[in-house]
Image 1: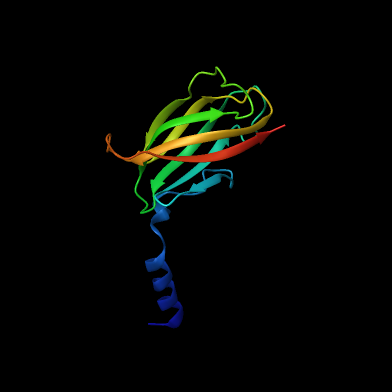
Image 2: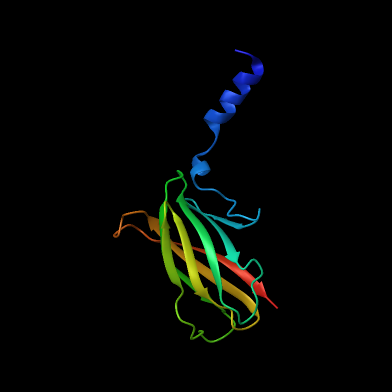
Length: 138
């Protein structure tokens, strides 16, 4: 076997399982959140989040082993203010660890904490892990 072919074979064999959980959700951009057990890739739609305008998150939710995981809940809070009265976003499973979270809205400027609650797919009694990401709006 030629050295180049052997190197390619080693590279392919060592590629992590993330290949089934793509980081790029279109338009060549996105946010990736890691924990010890999970990886979340997300992209807002529209790409630019505007104050007071609803938006959607397109997401891939996977275990560290590259298996699809379940997105249980999404919550956005602005810690500097009283709890917002916005309705909870709607989570729609598209299949294979892919989700669409609609109805998010940042009603005031500041550092919004968005929390994602995740568990292994199909384990309704499984342990839920909370991952967070901050979005800053001015």
